[in-house]
Amino acid sequence: MSTQADNHASSAGVAPTQPYLWSLRREMWESRSLWIAPLAAAGFVLFGFAISLARRPHLAGRISQMPASARDAMHLIPYGIAMAAILVTVAVVSVFYCVGALYNERRDRSILFWKSMPVSDATTVLAKASVPLLVLPLIVFCVICATQLVMLLLSSAAALATPPGELLWGPVPLLRIWALLAYGLVTLTLWLAPIYGWLLVISAWARRGPFLWAVLPPFAIAVVEKLAFDTSYFADFVKYRIHGGLEQAFVSLPHHDHNSFEWPVPDPAKYFSTPGLWAGLLAAAALLAVAIWLRRRREPA
Amino acid sequence: MACIEARGLRKVFGKTVALEKLDLQVETGRILGLIGPNGAGKSTALNAILGLIPYEGELQVLGRNPWTERNKLMQDVCFIADVAVLPRWMRVGDAVNYVAGVHPRFDRAKADAFLARTSIQRTSKVRQLSKGMVTQLHLALVMAIDAKLLVLDEPTLGLDLLFRKQFYDNLLNDYFDSGRTIVVTTHQVEEIQHILTDLMFIDRGRIALSCSMEAFEARYVELAVAPGNIAAARALKPIYERQAFGRSVLLYDGADRAQLGALGELRTPSIGDLFVSVMGGNADTKGNLAA
Image (cartoon, rainbow over all chains, first blue to last red; front, side, top):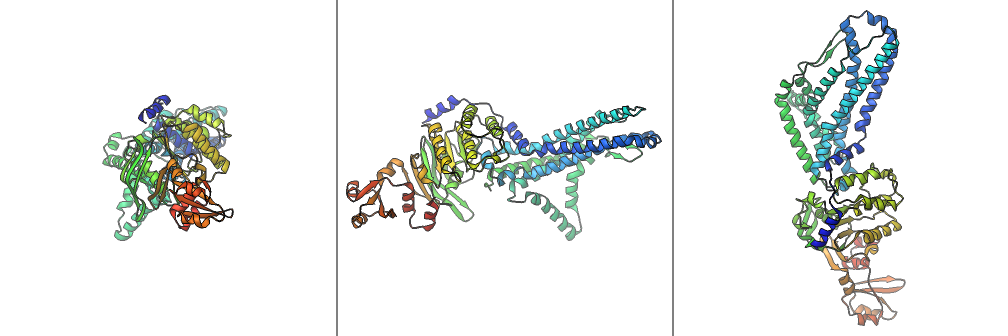
């Protein structure tokens, strides 16, 4: 028997395979919202910005009376709003992606097809974890950069069309914005890693309603703690896990009002020496291991 | 070396015993039909063989432990769980690309050639295909994989007769050879009778019957009793009796054919009739096999 079997193997040859890359590609096919949603957000941002440009000539008189610092701030605000809008969109997308990542394939039983392929559970789960940890930050970075570039070109074109032409490249230093964005995305993503890990574990575990299982039990713990002991350690812990990252990554968070704009100052030394970061990354690794274990063991639904 | 070897294979879900000390040996180059009523443990046995669930007892598939060595095993094992498991959002072309991208033994040319014989469009999504076409697509992907063991769990469920016949014809003519082993479960037993080399009945987690098809044909015989001979025929201890077109048809286990031949017309029984007789007067099992 063995000789015949060996003939089989040799006659077909063994083609090189890239299970991780193809698993990643599969995620992009399956969850098209990963790239459609940020593009849609960018579209709305540009639409709103174009309208604001059309209205600008009517405001020209008021703008010229502003102090220079306030004018700079006013020019920068739309770029901040664009960034925030796309970031919030992708945050929502990544939560829903993670919650469904290991649940949907069990619900539609396609997991039996995926498991019939020589792709290990570890490869699959790591590919899925790479989406919020790697792919989405990259997508969001590219989409924000492209959106802001288009905004700058649009406003420059608008400024040239209405003399006296005023190019805005001075008050809107895109490269500086993008460098801060890149730093912010890396620090935020690493900080949020355990949250993604938690969502993936629930996604692999829940028999139904993974979103509710991911959100309601932590909420219930916080409520019980508040009522029983009138403390909020757990709620504070969750809050810290969600937005503590930016506080640690910057000396001060970006702050602006109508009169001035203060640039955020990165503080990588503080960020990378925060025990919360490393504890979070350890927790994320442990949660991913649990998700792999669950995908291996969970009966097809 | 046996392709599949199980000794004392046992699986318990909570308080339900799905498999009770199963002993099983499937040699390479065989086509084994695993037949049993719903809930008999067929799928559990297959899931254990495929390394999808942990189990008790000893189990070797292609010389490997399917639970601990699953990742390596899946390079040589392929399975179709049932018709509906291809992801519905996937495009046909992407499905081919994906398998080509992850499976070292996938031959894209073979899959393309097989798909070219169907009416499946490469730009279609799986959800747009009919059930029969989804099965054709799945079969095209699986047949292009040079696997040593192919496991089919109800592969033709919900398909019409034409697709079912085509499915097994393709499998037998274009895929099967002496280096491969196929294990198949189905309720449509009559349709696979002619392709099987081995037969196994499984009921309540135990093997109720296990034999090769040669042994099956040598051992069991069906007698359509000529009018007037019914009392004599019954005296020879048939294991099962049914009525067909007004005649009594009796099934015998290891009876003397010369003696029976004098009483009427002899023929090879169907697996379905043998199944009903072996499983005994259990109304549920009869109902399940009516298909």
